Length: 457
Image 1 (cartoon, rainbow, N blue to C red):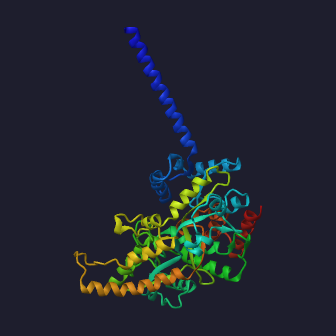
Image 2: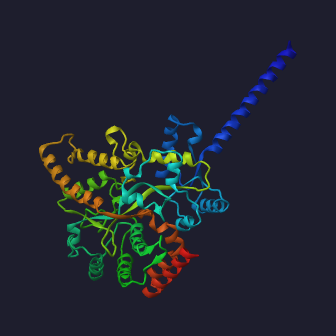
Image 3: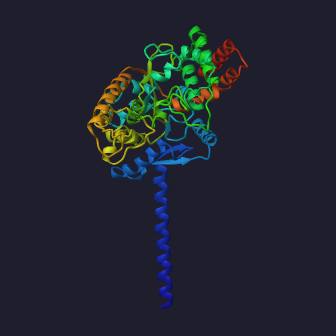
């Protein structure tokens, strides 16, 4: 009996081991079938979006449709890994626009798949006419849709007429050149945006507007560039922003900054910018919206979140399911903060959805929002009249800006200094120019040469 009992135990153990090995093999297969995404920050908005998708996708698909987030200790390690794998015809299946990669060169080397082809191949129900046309066009290069934007933000600044009055300026014929001149004449301490990062984004956005990455041309020798870049240099270099101080565009005296980006106003969502309008009016000031500095005074926008698909990926069908999820009306509403009426307002770090219906819904939600500004739990007649007045001005200003967007860039304004082109191609030259080590003409000549080498070699 003892021997039989022992054999039974051994048999049971062997069966358990076999089942365990089978389970491990199944897990390995599932893991290998999953999409791969590389990041050095698994807590950012895009990674959070993936994590939500990984939970929801199981309602329709099996685990192989999930996305494996592979986190690296730092950006250098991640980019080295991506570069090495891409050169070997491998790499992650999906690539985020947040990553500081040489996207222009990667396009030339056929690294990215044409999403339109994938949509047609796998009979997707995505119709890109259902999304903001100008924003979605930013993902098309040479007739191919290499990038799919999910969320965007108008490239604008918020200020007050009272703040501009301090420099004898007004919103109707506002000029950044005149602002620079006034700041230089005043010789007073000032903070342009309330933080150094936005100062550099302001500078780089102007520089980048003189590069046509599609046509591989530059216009840094234009007189309008040479004149205006000096004004921007002056206003950035003379900025006295204190890193230990909080600046508020509503404050015209102590800690006030001159301009604010939508991102610094409660994250940049419609509700965030609208709340800023309310706060400004409550201080008996007049909010204004100004387009970012460009020589044609155009209204532009930038992509906050979007992806490309690796051409070498053998899981393009699964990547397409992720795109369908991200572009869906519910998900777009959820992440741009307009689902507060349903228990969750997404994130205040994502501004506007590309989905037209989701955008309309976000506007509807904010239109019906009651503003209890004295926080007494009631919405009285005085507050109603105040809200109606602010609403009428806000929607006229804000929706007018959205309607007039003429073009969109793929690169997120808040992180513009760290794009591959700005950090690795022209970054050192820009630093020398700001320090006064080279003249304006030399600066224009050097960034022209560096850019042409980058674009053509």
